[in-house]
Image 1 (cartoon, rainbow over the protein chains, first blue to last red):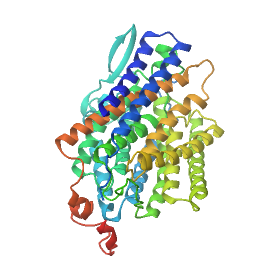
Image 2: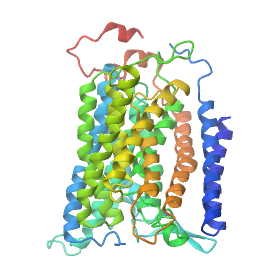
Image 3: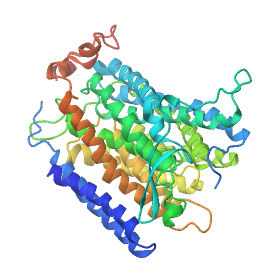
Image 4: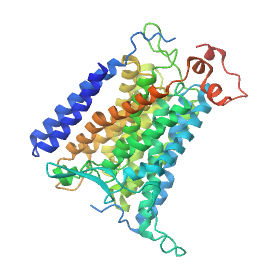
Length: 59
Length: 442
């Protein structure tokens, strides 16, 4: 889950770069950016969940 | 826009004063980190802060400033779809060529002053970015590992992003190349300093895990209060002075604002911090019956951080609103991290610096008053936000993960039980005080 999460984070950034390189200004660029950030948020959630201790009984 | 490094004499004089004030921000953050940790780790926290600043200075001297570069300076540029992408500074290492001594005996020419000021500013900023993760890794992060991690931050992560937004890199050029407003704008470093430092803090916290005794067997967090609220709150006041210097120097050096805007920067900085601290005090008063000192301190810091990016472009009312929302966000983030995600962040660095920094970057696009005819600023800020989350976080996590594989970041169980002061330094911060026995038994 952790690796998938980090891959999604990087994939989101790659989408942003692709957006810049391939799309013309105005509407689609903003939507593409929003989609890319959504992918990153999904990745961040996965990474965060993967770091929750399975049994946080460290006391 | 005025090209950076073509500053008037008054701008240079102001810049010098503000660059000299900026280290107080680091002093404030160091005090906050020390005060929010346990008393048996207080000396360790302050020694670690000094080491971080020293390492950041050396690494900046070695290569950090060369990678960061400056607008118009030598850089590595590649072309993608016919557009230039400036991705890394290519300046000389060891500050070579920074100052011309050609006319030695006649003094250093005035034209050489801006790059020297920028180099001083780069050192201060990389040191401050390195201090931020100390708050999150407090009470369990080894000193040697802190130094190694800081070297990676000051040598790779910080200069890379700082070049992209302050050194004429591709983020700063989004306006010229892709018609996105004035390109990514960040006068005071909400992105390169605070978000980068805060995301590194998140990575460190994930890697080292929570402190022993922080979570019970059923996963419920235990309160481990900081040992000195006075030091924490004094750190907040000290940080404010440094923040004014940081924001004003950054705005003069990298955005080229006119000297008249400096007063607005000071006003906005104070308004943001005040709004954030008050709203956090109010929220904790309503929810818990009394205002919480450490959360209020975190609120103050988040207000300072969130106001950094747009300090020179926000009207005062917008700066107040940005601070207000930063206070709400930091309260939510602290709860989310501690209760839901089991992230143990004693200094609140992730909530104040990462969350506050990301919000500050976005706020420039939402509320910034820029020149007419610069649409698309929100898109440029969004690209910066996505870069911080999608590139900087994986990068800093990967670097620290590899470092942890080479040498453990976390102190041994025995060392954590004994306290970092005794275990790593051989002496406590308060040798004349009797420490409460119960604290050692946790």
